[in-house]
Image (cartoon, rainbow, N blue to C red):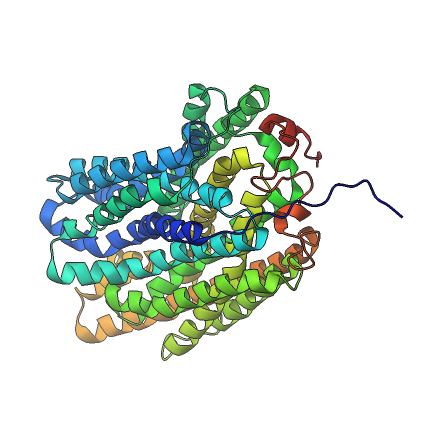
Length: 542
């Protein structure tokens, strides 16, 4: 029996240039995540140097993340249009300049402004690095390993930020933590033209400026509202920001559906693999963000560790995540991808259960064991889920897909901090049993949160302070335990969901995630020469 079916095209294997290029792309990825956590240690030094108000201190911390989240969609799509390598190099120059300006800021206002510009510059890097990987690695399994390296670098930077920041602050002034980006960007600028390919969408069209404005007006209020809800509870201003952002988000989506060349092509969501992976990434990061908040608080406020010591205790969890991220593509060659992701999420559920049994006295070993298991279980969804999102999109839209992957992570962390943070805070307030005889104002401050209890304890007699702190530690640990239970349930549900919604995605058996996704083309293998619009139109309606 003969067949007229054309022989399958074997994608080319990556060579030394591509793997060296991956090392170059890993540098800005590591830098972005490191910059998000390094300021926590520098804040006391900044407060001493600039005496910022409480509001200014919060904006120093948050404006960087706000700008990254707000500009990811725009920068991902801009890279698709003007060239991903070109945008990466423009961003490298901007990051270098804004890093120096931030390091040498002379006032709170200048620091907030330069930190915002640094966030906008950094937003050019993340989607460009991830999209370029899809251009460099055409073999599905090699691309999976490359994206696993990319995801591992991001997780490593988050964990190493406090450690590196602490080491720098031990010997240099606060601005040194921002100058880390300069040598990294110089290396990128030298190596990028040699090792990285250029790619842009030939059918991209013009950038719709109104869509850019709408995307910023939708994403930034949502992120702001979530962060403020986590800090202050259900106050009118963050609720209004959240609702307003969601309304503008609906307007943004409606406009994208009408445009010939949208900022974000909504037909990407017609792919079940794309949408399912994004949602699982989002909800897994909700659990990670909420638990991370309480675990770092436990290390510093219950165990009494300084930030650098706490950062060092976080390193094993980052190592576990990196190891799991590298193992996941290997397992996905032999097992269905949905099963690999489900096994990881199931492991995370076990880790969260351990956290649910942590006690305020002597609980550090169990906490660390649980957190290491949680991060080990999260490695597969970070690596395989990101690969699935990017691989399910046509190559011309890889930048947009990479931006959506990053946004799902940012929103997930914000939602976790807001939702699970509120849950843990409510448990704290209901469980704390303060000693009798405290002045009303002091008691109210101590009931407001562990930070308040630590502050008022410094003003009390030693015996009474010890009682207040013991009650606060017990209540805070109860909040941590309940958050652990909530995260365990969420991780278990996600594990069951992954086995269902990702069951069509195979790792071994010759299929890659993108090959299992209906209608998606692997980068560099469009034999028919179809435009991005035609390929997206071919995706089935869900």
